[in-house]
Image (cartoon, rainbow, N blue to C red; front, side, top):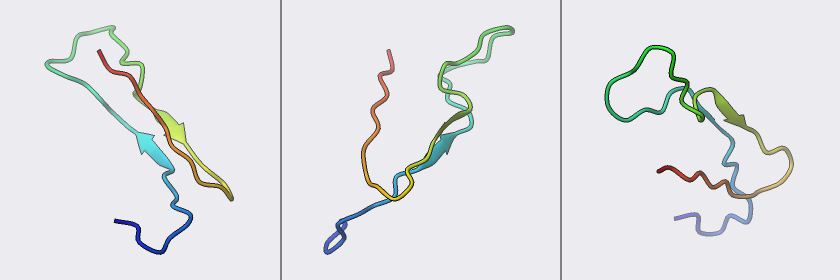
Length: 49
């Protein structure tokens, strides 16, 4: 998919991640998550259960 590219910017923001209806007072841990890579490449892992 990234043929010929040695660096890929995977910076991202998760504005909202939820499964099912929203419940008052419950904060989803990944909401508002921001990951930025500057001058490097890498990976991120999130575990959802």
